[in-house]
Length: 358
Image (cartoon, rainbow, N blue to C red; front, side):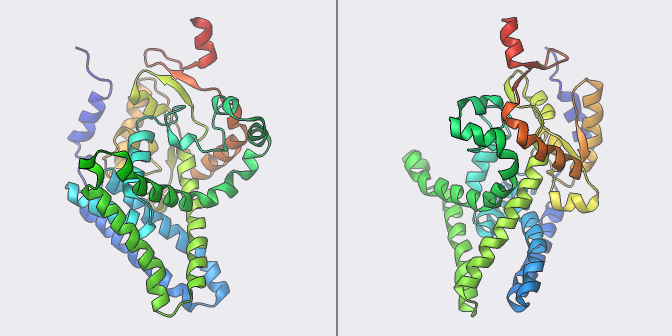
């Protein structure tokens, strides 16, 4: 029986101890970020209005970074125990951001990670009215097709302003509808209860507590909306560079090759790595989703070397170049033809070429 193509790679990474968790570092980062954003949140109502506005993008950047540490917990990448990972995910996602951790687990872990950039399966490339491939475009109505051909590139970044708020609303609906979609035994499980409780606490902490402290409800509301608009834009910048302008896949035969060839490694320094929380190493993260983001910089050279030795496409570029490529790509994504990833071949095949061969 032949050995799995990833077996030697995983063995080498395991023997180097790079799959060990870093719970102390992970919790230290979360606590430091809570202290930073907490300080910013206290400053905003004290500062003069325009100083507060000027500080908002920096507040949003650190808020985004803290929000992304919840991603580690959901992937069981932060702690050695299930309890530790759930605790981190619960404190960061539903409590801090107001977004359901179980919604994120379903959308991100179950669907996106299993099928990155796969047409019809990856929710990250199916966001109406945007088209991410010619297949999406062909299935759209004439008015939406006009938008995708002529306006999508211009409107993409303005649309990202609703990203964080949209995910929160989708998460709320996920939690509310959950009891009606599952069996009686699983209807009100512990994770659902934690999710719902933390979301309720989120809104109490964000709206009731500040008002009790003498801040007007309107001021709190405007700050909340503006902050999470900026968080949505920053999140989109981090998300898009990892997969945009990489192949959209119609079919594939080997999941490991799919993970490598639909992702992109973003070259950042120590400061960039702090803010990306591991998402600058998309290829490594997709191959080893439970690996701590603190280990990914050491894992990356091994994965790159292994990929190049086996003739697999490993892409790595700088952040601003990736951001530009991704932005330009959104203007032309509507005509991108999905491919078929064939691990037995040196080259991937376009869907229309496959049809001609049949």
